[in-house]
Structure formats: structure tokens, C-alpha cells
Length: 392
Ligand SMILES: Cc1cc2nc3c(=O)[nH]c(=O)nc-3n(C[C@H](O)[C@H](O)[C@H](O)COP(=O)(O)O)c2cc1C
Image 1 (cartoon, rainbow, N blue to C red):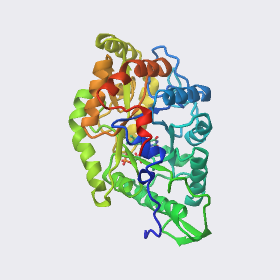
Image 2: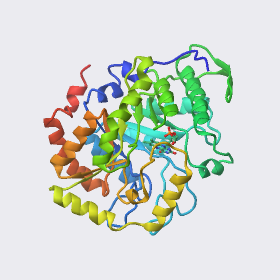
Image 3: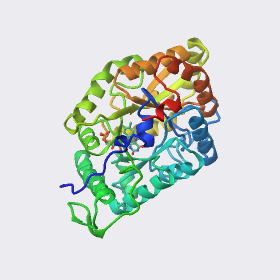
């Protein structure tokens, strides 16, 4: 599609929340547990809760500790979620509504929502206005993670059939290009695309810094090409499964591929990944805790979730097997505070600009991470005091 107008990235505005966050050598995010079971299919006891109040409190806890962003997952699931004893993901707060609601109860942290732009009746005009409004409510702290989906059953819930993998990104490109035009164009937009048409359309107010923060969650060449055109942040996974020692070997090449996709743009993506962090006072205690979680798998929900992934066409999790889901995470970081810091540093060396952390028992484990690991990251220069990021 020919693009009429392209808004600048918030990264180009030195005062924007994203530009500030990006001054951190390693950005820190929290993957919100807005769904039953969060990201781990284990029956080992914990207090992680999908409820709104819990997610609000966690976001405030993360913000107080200097975290840069929180992130909401999106999935569409039938009755009982993925089943099992835990009824995995049966309750699922909508990430768009949740992230918008987080803005007025926070002041600095960025909130990012996943949106399936190809499902239902999303039209670029609608989402352009919704996102511009969210961005104003959040004072420029709102991000959109545009995804195309991968599960065949999800589109059927909307009366649709799954579109072929690369064609989804062609449609997403048209969708995102129209939104950009609506955020940046000077006049009413009349446009006849392959999939979307508009006549005399306009969006005002404009987003705070050109456009909302744009994120792409992808692991494929088509996804990286889309990201290079539209996104500030690439949220990717581990091509070699979640076990740290194996995953880390493949990640430098993976992040290099993403950067290469951006070569022609003259921009540099911020690349992030989702580690599940299991941290205790000592390495041995952390390993024992991880073993306890792993030894209580919710077998039925794991089988159901695995079937979804096997039937999906995403490139993101080729070597992730059912057993990995008990603990969860796209990469698993297990150890005492020094070992956890070592592994985060290794991710930084592998080309990551940020991590979006998950925990098994969110509230106490986030608190322990902040108390025990964050000072090590600061001492190693991986984290700056928030005040230092405020100066352009
Ligand atoms: C790190 C990561 C996170 C993702 N998060 C979501 C999500 O929240 N919901 C979803 O439906 N798909 C998610 N996806 C998959 C996207 O829908 C993606 O567009 C689809 O799998 C096909 O693209 P790909 O092969 O480029 O990954 C994610 C993918 C990755 C790599």
C-alpha cells in the first residue's frame, strides 16, 4: 500500500515515556497475570490472581520499583478455558480495557495491550481513535501490540476462518498503514485498499508523540518485515525452547535477524523477550522451588494447551514442548540473585534491550526480585536510576 503520511515514532521524541524507558540499558517489564493460572500450568500452591485489583496492585508495585512497562496478553478461549484442575485461563481480563484502566492509577509506567486486529469487525479508523484516546488518558504511555493470531479456532469464534500466515501480515500492514495515516495526515482520509476502505475519515486528537508505542509479537520473517515498517519494539520468543543454556546459544543470531530486518529503515528496534524468573536466596533453593512447581503439572490443561499450539501456525515456539508449560515462560531463568542477574546480563549481550518478566507467585516474587536482583543489575550498569532516564 502507498503510505500517505507516517507519524514519527515516540522514540524520536526525547521527552516521550518510551524514549525515557529506552535509555535503560535493559528495560524491565512485567507480563501481567490477567488470566487464570497466569503463564504456568502447575498446581503447586500460590496466590497469583487474575483479578483486576491484583493486576492494578502489581502494576503499582512494578512502577514503584522503576519498571518501565506492563504488558497484557490476548487470547480467545471457550468455556472452562484450557480445562484441567486449574481451568487454565478460564477467566481472562481484556487487555485493552485493563491497560487503559491502569493509566489513571499510575504516573510513569508504560502500559501495552495486545490486539488481534484481524478478528471481528476491527476497522483501522476505530482502533486509531481508541488508541489515540488511550494514549491521551495515559499521557503518551500507551502501547499497542498488534498481533495476527495463530490458532484456527479463535477466528471461528468471530465467524471467520484463519487467514494464511504471510497474508495475515499483508492485511496487518494495510491496517497499520491506515492507522498511521489517520494519526499523521492533515486532511480527511479517503482510501480504497485491498481489505479496508474509508471515505472522509479523520481522527483527532492525535496521539501524544506522533503515534502510540507500537509493538510486534513475532518470530517469523514476515512478522519482522511488518515490525520494521511499523513497530518500535519487537517482542520475540526463543527459537530453541525455554531452557536457558540451550536457548541462549541461538538468541544472538535471532536478534541479529530482527535487526537486519530494520537495516533499510535506519531505525533500531528495541527487542524484548519473556523470561519466567524463579529466584530464591540461593541457587539450590531456587532449583528446589522450580522442581516443586514442575512436579505438580496440571496434565489435562497442558495437553489441551499443547494441542492448540500444535494446531497453530506461529513460528514462535518450535522447540517448546508440553513439559515446558508447567513452569511457563519463553525462556526460564532459575537461580539465586547473582545467577539471575548473570542470565539477564547474558540476554542483554545476546541483543535484548528489555525483558518482560513473569513470576510463579507474582506479588512476593516480584518483591524479592526488586529487593535482591535489581541492586545487582544497577551495580552492573544494566539499570539506571529512574531520575537519570528523565534527562534527554
Ligand atoms: C513473544 C510472542 C508473543 C505473542 N503473544 C501473542 C498473544 O498475546 N496473543 C496471540 O494470539 N498471539 C500472540 N503471538 C503470536 C502472534 O499472534 C503472531 O502474530 C502469530 O503467531 C504469527 O506470527 P509469527 O509466526 O510471526 O510469530 C505472540 C508471538 C510471540 C512471538
